Image 1: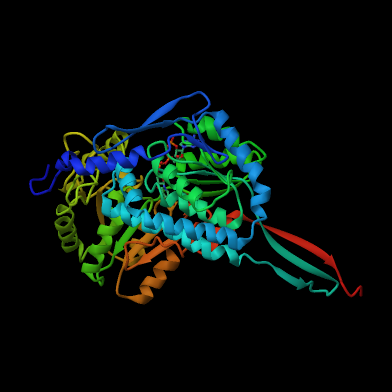
Image 2: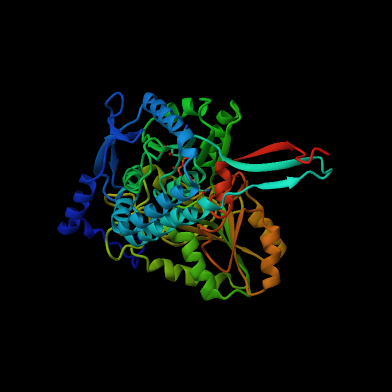
Length: 506
Ligand code: NAP
């Protein structure tokens, strides 16, 4: 380990905190949630959710079977007609109450996410605020669903265009943002009048279970939201995707799984939204404010320990500022304390599991084998938990795997460029197109980049773009559709057109 890097894993022994953790875990439901009831899985199976800081079991919970999946879809289908008829204002008020309840219980949600996913508590609190905002935003959108009435161009008929809820929807979510990835789908679906089945990631299902209790308390009717946490993802969701009662699939996760689900969904021409992987470039031009660029790079690289689809995967820096930017980034990353997320000084928690850490280290080793230099870090932290040192790599070969694959860890590969054209070419050299970042004081250049970069989102002089009021999503293999913003509710609405004879009978 680099001598001056701070590692503090001593928080594990704090007894009052351990009591808080135990009390929170003991308060959670452990069943699958179907038709408004918590029940054991149909075969009685359970699975353990573990703490990535220690590898210890947090809680054993029901492991849903394909029969439970079927029951959940039946409940969603059964509740759909009545739910679609509720007043938009009623759906809005349920969402608003849910926002208030999540906000009031922010500490519980944050602690739970830290326990099951590993992120530092400060980041978990940030996710609670972000995740809750989707509830507030879509509570405001629920009563703004509208249509139009128009006279046909030839004047001989009338056109009535309305929006209808799509219908029962299946949500499959990843482990990296256990609350926000769920609320980004659930909130617009509630606003639009859709019922749903949620299959959270097996690594982090507990946050969804707590969230379901909040929605119950907020008055969500039975059957509108059903949850089937499982270790048998394909076996449980496959039959649902082929079931004609299902009308929509929204998936957030890897491009590999997403493309297989798109193929499955094609069988019944199921509507899909896909929030998939990323390989974000972060460009630093020679006219950039370097303080701002380093701040932005820290945020874009180390938010969630690098385990974010929006993480800066490639830092592409103008050759005139390469050395200074690298030195400053190394100095900042070195100060990040690596510790269990519950430790007050934790800035970097563990990676989510052993496989993730192994992959991160393999990418670093591959880069070094092809000529890269380690400017900081480069090693797993010994001892319990899946900790990895914040790492900076320079002098990378263009074909190093780390420049082409999603890293999902706290590793910053830096490459250089000489001209704006070269920077754009490097940035677009990926099959992904989720987000890009650029730092420059030249507004015209910033606007050129916003048009030239092949991405769904672009951060200009900022290292973060996520905002519930903005449409989140990517192009190319980063996905289909948008979550959040005015656009987010459209994913759950179907357009219906009614042709009407000329009421004047002309
Ligand atoms: P993942 O392995 O693709 O898993 C995502 C979800 O799909 C999990 O719930 C997983 O269940 C489930 N799943 C896996 N195989 C399945 C199958 N055959 N059929 C149905 N469901 C299946 O992704 P992850 O490792 O959890 O998350 C990281 C990925 O998500 C990264 O690529 C990241 O970029 C992407 N992501 C994208 C966004 C975005 O908005 N674009 C946001 C966050 C994350 P199990 O838990 O049981 O495996």
